[in-house]
Length: 629
Image 1 (cartoon, one colour):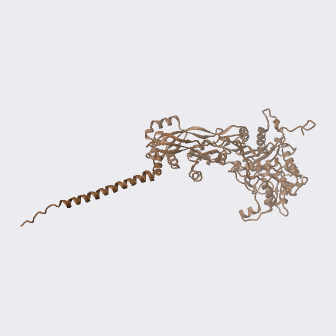
Image 2 (image 1 turned 60 degrees about the vertical axis):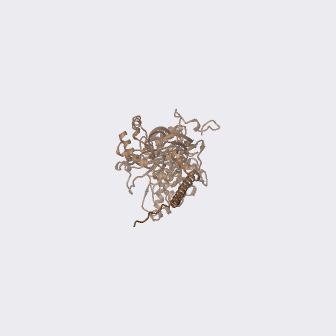
Image 3 (image 1 turned 90 degrees about the vertical axis):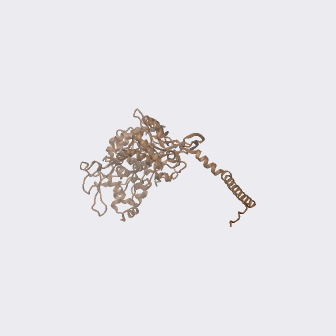
């Protein structure tokens, strides 16, 4: 028998539908509530955050590098300026595949694989997002045209006009002014990332490096609106950069050229100072190089030629060259001997052509093998008598000698604004014990008396020691900056003046220096005879290779680069010193025959007028009787 069919419960079905509708409606309301809450959170609670994100996608801050300060010589002639140059830049964030883009650039401009590798290296050095990185400078008109034609294939690549450092005088000031170059990875870590954003060059050597903070200036910026492809649509806000300050140097272009002409292509160094102010009038290191090669990146081949040259054009002989001073320090030794009481103005020593320590057979030879007989202090300087100064050094001892020579600047950095300067060496007992673990020997003191042995000086130190003779011990440190935007450079750590027991000791040593050029037996008499003004000077010879006991120096048997260096120091006019000069001619052999004429030519260029007469402001004043003393 079949089961009866149950009747449908419409009330139950209705309840079930109502329950589902309520649950569904509640769920919909809940989801709407969540959506509203999320919208509220995003648009109200996090409004500032998302507004900033949105703005950053549309607005970018671009740095505006400041113009680098200019550099002038003392007469206002420009020696470092900025000139416009078209460069090729790449912005990685705007390039779809920047490495592929670089490949296209190389293809379009027909460049080498070496240049392609250099481009990639430069792009990887980019420091900020959306910052254009220059990869190529000094674009020609043809290269600019090629980039324009293929612009559609080069996303993120632009041709930009910018100012690039330029040195119109080329080689003349390469070692003093220095040069700028691209910022490397090590420098990036040390620089202010904000102030140097957008800046791709920094001072590498010389004045450019020492005064980098002054020359660089302060970065500016502008807020720009961009489209989805990163192209700038408009500038929203701009803050102009503060350009670097201009610097006027103490150097004189005409004197610099005259000094270079005086060296006549020989390897060497010349420093000319103004004794009363410490201003460096000329600073020559030969051979030199063109600093413009380094500004936008020197080629490997060109740099290799400079680096590997036997003449070392990159080496700054004025500040880093170390040479035995030879007899050029004898006037300073004379002042020390007088002040310590070891000798007097009238002390006489007999010179048979050599000197011997007590109970020692070794003979320390005078350059004049025949000897000068009885000599006093003035004659000893005039004749550059080694025996007299051997004897003085032995009596003075290394300790007092070290004290006085250090006061003259030997063995220490003397400049105010030349960071490359090396200290040189003024040896002492403690130095030798620390360096060689040996005691100091009397024979080492003897040869120091004539500027040989361990003593090492730079041409700048010799020039400063000579300036101290001219100013009677008044210490003014040599410097290159004459003024910075109208202000003057000051010495934060002045060195004490050299004060003697009797100021007349200076006069005694200076009279000897004057007789070197104007005395009947002066070693540089030939040079002095051609001068229209009085010069105080001292010649010197620095040995490059040692000569055995008993042997004579024979230049004919030596390689040219093993011959003695020629040195000469001088100041003039004697009555009112306006210039102090130190000259070093590598392998020149004769201080009085080679270096002295060079110094005379430099002083003539500064002191004489176009007619070859002493300039009026340097002439000796008339006495009451109307004559010149």
